Figure (cartoon, one colour):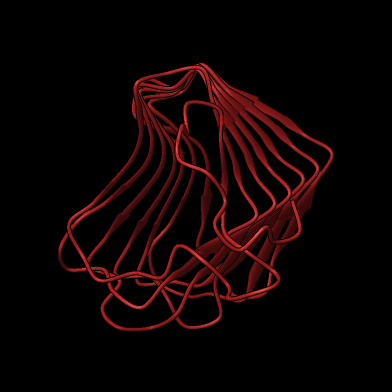
Amino acid sequence: GSVLNLAVSWVNITGFTIRNGANGITEGVSGGHHIFNNNISGNTNDGIFFQSASGIFNNNIFTGNTRGLYLYQASTGSEIYDNQFSGNIYGIYLSDTGAGTIPVYNNTISNNGDGIYILSTSNDNLIYHNSFMSYTNQSYDEGTNNWDSGYPSGGNYRDNWVSPDTLSGIN
């Protein structure tokens, strides 16, 4: 089962170690949650799984989960920033989020099987200022998403990028 199952709206979860469940945190009926400053590790399925709900996820550490953060049919009001994803099969996994913009920024995504995995049913998300490091499949995107917040702000850091920065934008 889940270590923590949210069944009400507007819950703040901060300062916890959430580990060794089938899922760390699950949510499927409401939204408006703020999940921050947690250590989420060793869950056999998902560190966090949100279905049809929104949430703000920041300053969490996701390690050793199948999917660190999985948003399914969750978009409006969701935001993912300043997290660390390491040693998961998928760091961030987005499915069926429709055309609602989910900002994904300032995350450190390293040593996962796939850093960010986005299915074709998730579009118009804004993914920028993330650091992708130390694995082959840094990102996979079947949808139509934005991987750059425009000049001069820029896109993402990839440690295996070999092409020059043609605009010499801000790092």
